[in-house]
Length: 413
Ligand code: GLV
Ligand code: MN
Ligand code: MN
Ligand code: MN
Image (tube, rainbow, N blue to C red):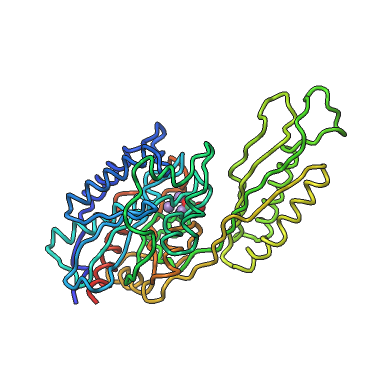
C-alpha cells in the first residue's frame, strides 16, 4: 500500500491553473460569469480539455455534456475512483465555487505523473454539467441524470429565460458527447469544494470533513392579478401581484426564522410583468427554495407553504400557481469514504471538523449510487455566490493534498 501522505502536490501550479481558469468569464469585480452551456462555458471546457490532453488523460463526454478524464491503473478491470466538481458558475459567481474541485483533480493527476505513480485502479476526473441551476432552474443537472435521479428527457426539455432548451444549449456549444449519461460501476467519488459558509473560518479549521448534505426543495410560482393604471386605479380595485409577492416573500422569511439557525428560505428570482413604473403589476413569476438538515422539516414545508401562500394571495384577489420542481433529500455520505478524509486530516496534521453541507453539490446525486464523501476548505468571510469569493493558495493546497491522499488510498486498496 502506497503511503500517500509522503507525496506532495505542487501548490504553485495548482494556484496558477486556478487563476488561468478564472480568466475565462472574468468579471470586472474579480469574479467569474461562466454560466452553464454558454460560449464562456464552452471556452472553459475547451481549456480544461486541453489541460487533460496535455496530462495524457483520455477524455470522454456523455449526452449531458458531463466530461470524464481518465488515467489508467494497473488493473483496468477495477472500477475507477472518481473525483471532480463543476466549471459552470453563477452569473455573478466567484473564482472557486466548483472550479477548485476540478482544478484540484487535475493537480492530483499531474502529481501522479510527476511521481510516476501507477494506481491499482483507474482514476477519473469529472466536470459535471450545470451544477449551479442558475440558467434552467434546476441545480446539479448533469449529475442528476447520470445518477438516474431525473430523466434525461425531462432535463433536456427545460428552458432558460430566452426559451432555449437544455438540449439546444448542449448542441449549440458542442458539449454533447457520445456516451449515454448513465453511471457505470465506480469505486467511490470524492469532491473538494469551498465551504461557501463561515464555519471553518470562524473556528480556524483548515478542512471540513463533510458527512452529508441538507435537504432542499425548490418551487416555481406564478402570481396573477391584473395590469392597471397606476394613477387611476383606487386601492380597493387593485389586484397588485407584486404587493402579493412581497407578502409571500416575507412568509418565506418567517418560515425560515421559525426553524432557528438551521432554517433557510430564499426568494432569489422574481420577474415582474409588465415591469413599468406606472402600471400596477399584473403578473409575477418567482422561484423560491427552502433548506434544512431534517427531511421532516422540508416535508412539512412542502405541505404547508403553498397553502399559506395561496391564502395570502386569495386575500388580495390574486391567483397563485405554485409547484415544487426540485427536491433533494438529506444525504448522508459513505462512512468509509468519510473516514478516509478524517484519517488524511490526521496524517497530514490539518485542523479539521465534521460538518453537514449547507449547499447542494453534485456529490449529493452521486452519493445515491456510488460511495461518496466531500472535503471542504474555508472561504473568506464565508462568502460565496458572490464575485468577491476568496480563498488563499494555502487553503487550496491543503484541500488538494487531502484529495490526493484519499484518492490514492482508495485506488490502491
Ligand atoms: C448551488 O450552488 C446550490 O447549492 O444551490
Ligand atoms: Mn459549487
Ligand atoms: Mn454554486
Ligand atoms: Mn452548489
